[in-house]
Image (tube, rainbow, N blue to C red):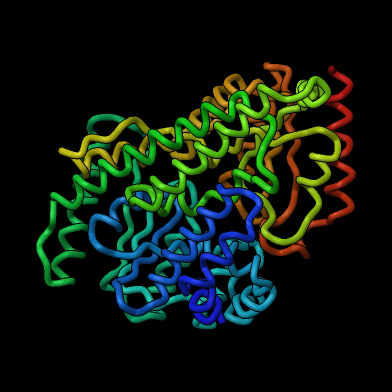
Length: 413
């Protein structure tokens, strides 16, 4: 089913027509870029690698492997209305119901053969411990346990841990190349790292524009950009997508600065929200409710550029440093520091943490995050729900709590 959809949408005339249906250039390039890489993964013409979300996927591009992110694709299947089917299949295979539904849905999709068969599976123990377990089960099912790699991310960042992680990345790369019957191409690694730096530069420009921007393209949602932000770093497509996002948002900022007085007055009263974790991938009224009350999600935790510029001459050390710099690694204080920095940079009025079902890592730090934001006089709403399974989310309760949260912020102004 997914292959048929991608083959139809991925043909040049349909893709061109499909692209013209978007009101936002950002959404257009996001969707076209995503369809192209997914079509490549499903084509059977290239080696495919399953990768966990928080890996540095520049590793895949450097090795000539098409990255496929099962957690992200679980959201894609939910958008296609397949989540009930994949979750039911996972339950029938005895996957525990308290497991994160991204992984449960992805595991169900694997059992139903909805995903392309991987040649390699590479995952890290960064933030999410479900990936290393479910991905190994996938490796057993596909008969590729010899091509399953678990990368150990140290708790702290130091010269010693960078070297330790870099050595793992180099060993994995050499083994993958050996199994593909080719030599390790360091020139390709350098090229990928250079593209990753260009991607990072455009992403930072996008984030800078958003510090002032309140007049957004129709239907723009920064939470939709999880695939290019993680999976396309180090590619020309990733650079192009973020360059186009920047150009469109810069244009909207110019329009905002030249708006009529009434529009300026309305925008000046907009309350700014920082969103933590991910969003529901099924139809919901959260964002329309915020917009109707003149609230705007001005930034999202997943779009935070947390890593320094990388060194093309030291690709393994650079990718190790990138992963170790992730605020979700190590102490909860790393994440708190990043959230505090984002809150200051974007003049945040309130923060929403979408407490996704089964994500112990994200939800476990909620109280510490709330106390830290309280010292800044910024309220935090912990919104219990499920990104994929609407049966684990109460629409009425979410609306009631969201309304109460907005009333708290309004009373402060």
